Image (cartoon, rainbow, N blue to C red; front, side, top):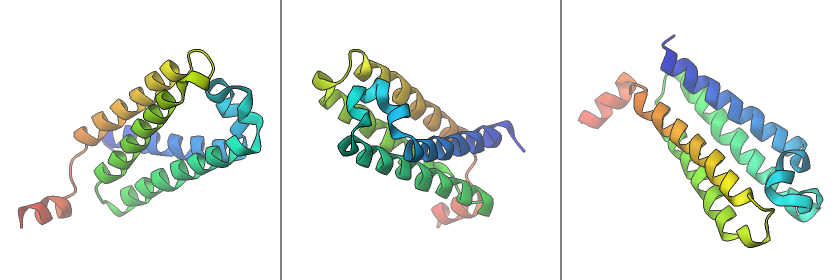
Length: 134
């Protein structure tokens, strides 16, 4: 298997694992991001929803890979999610722990860039290439 495809599958699988962990233990994963409010149910509801987004989106990418479909749409969705995480965090930065917004921008920004790099390096499946030519 080509290294780019292996890397893409690893990123997708890690994002599924992250989402599952966020569903199972939202406070543990989000305390540095949201502070003590991460322990409260009103914060855990959207954190678990974020975890579900991660699981569904990236598991969809893994299923697409198994079918030989393009992973680019799945990485585009992942990038969009990362960018909305950054925008939402920056919008609420005044009430977040010190450094949370910049840390989120770095982590989610790096994730978005990694996803973009992988998406651009992955070859389009033959069926997708043929469909674009029509």
